[in-house]
Image (cartoon, rainbow, N blue to C red; front, side):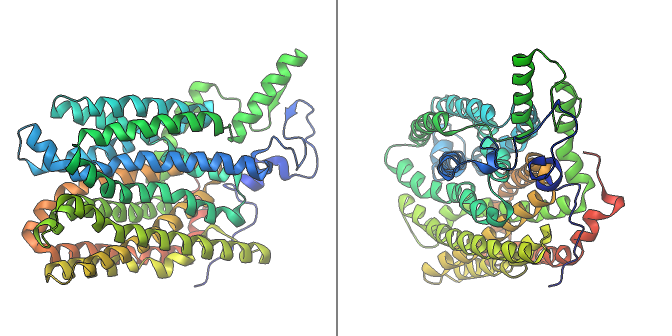
Length: 492
């Protein structure tokens, strides 16, 4: 698939334009604060490997645990409805998916704040709040209380989703970025997959409240680990701190960061607050690609909220055994992530060596792997509808999971590479859209399956996925032209 080559100096290229450590000559203004040469050990991209691994390992733990909470509670949905004396299945689905509504609101606050205070402080604050609200969920006495605390826990837990991609961009060069993104993405995706497996046994044996107590205990450990591991990685904040230190040491107020735009904190917050919306609604690349990822993610959560009832009613599995049905997702996700990460890194290295790397290079694996998504949906739906052996729908979920990972990783790296300097904002736009669809689409699951059945219900989802599979084909051809067109240049 041919891709148009764009000029090497891109206004969105943080590594080439904003991070001036790559410049050969020192800035002419002696009071303009930059890194001390291309090998400055304080520059996060030049940190020792062990320091990067420590930071990324802590972030991986963080990124696994909060999404785990989003779905680990799903098998206890019926138990919650029984305890609070209601039979409304829509409310039951909403108890699970309202966590994702917090994922919609959280990034819109966290991403702007990260441009003022950096990433590290927000990780710590949000992890602490996530712990508090998870304990509150375990102690909830009414269904409305559980709704509120789940929502607030989702807001706090969205931090690694909002800032994780940006942290990878801060630390890893583009030739290796896809592979590291694949490792990081195992948390946001495998968390929701592993959650129901563990949650089924917990809910069946010791009760749904223990789901939250277990998550709270793990969060306490995670909070201690990240307090030790995390260091600030965001270049504009680090250079501003360096400039502030020089102003204090020398008494000269003229020192300022190379990336300082002369804005107040209020102005930075206001600009950063509207930036995700500008990217989402004014950039056709961000709008359509995030919509593709969001629809895929919503279909994942729709399956999560219905798979337990399907395996109980169709295959007669006990509640705790139904959690094992999610293993197909898990294995498919692992295969999809690792293969896509390896292929994407190889493509990036070859294109960089030839001088033709563009963000659209990230879409090449998606041209082929995205078709696994509708294939998996057709396979899963009709094998369950025809009551084939239980391994058949599980294989279908594995195919679906593999395709989902290809889409998730390719879209994420494509958007981040397209807007490197604003990685947190474009990630926030992606997370908001994905979580909004993931929150509300599952509410339609029970009525859809009752009306259409398992076969045609999943076929409807597959036909929608088929339409979206043409998006990567379109943007691999015309994405560079759209991004560099004056018509679509955004004032960010």
